[in-house]
Image 1 (cartoon, rainbow, N blue to C red):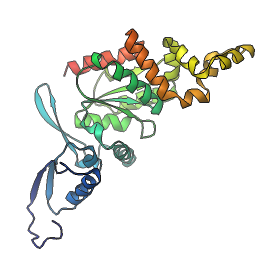
Image 2: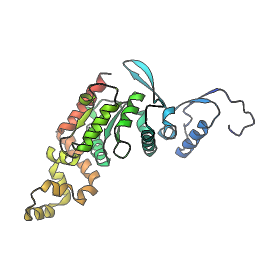
Image 3: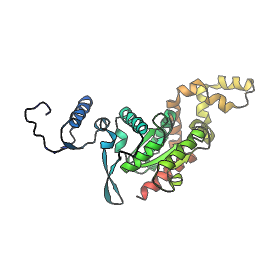
Image 4: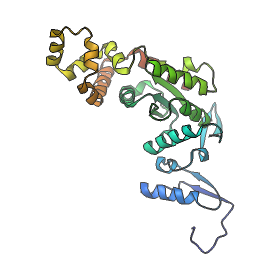
Length: 278
């Protein structure tokens, strides 16, 4: 198109799902080609690969609220440059798929992602049928840019954080960034413990962690009169290296027993209540 002899491009070009039937590498290439066309272009897409290569402020998201159709967009002055850079980097890492979700669950790091995604997957029948994405924010600019972008695009967000100072900062920044009221009650769940592993231990899953380190290690701790067995176990290298297995094991136990830890139950209730009212 760009190298053709006819340079009389239309002033407005509309394309429907140009990514259809293309290889992912070809999708990214055609996205770059479309952005270089000398005309205003409107493109509809269901491809995360395509979206991940589009500038953030060029994205429009069509959504419904209370039976009405809206178009969400991120205004040029909504985000600081560092917030845009952090979010666009996350989009490229995740192929932009979360921009198609109905709601986001924002968590701190990779461990939180593993545990929350495993538990919620095992409890899918207790959640609304709307689609969701779990997004880590610790390495991608914190909570503020995600709250701003979610609200600009008409995506409902929830925040699930630890009980330490970092968790409190994520909450404060989310509230400051939001344009809604009462979000601390409707959208945010904070643990009392310093991290999710400690919360799960206190919620009755200490045996899962103990099985990872083994009886020999535990007996050695007792012989040494270690006062805080919990710390000694949860901070071991074995626990850090087996978080994927631990997350799945705990999720299976929750599904079988139907005994949902309090904070996960709070999160599910907030999700269903909020999404059921819009």
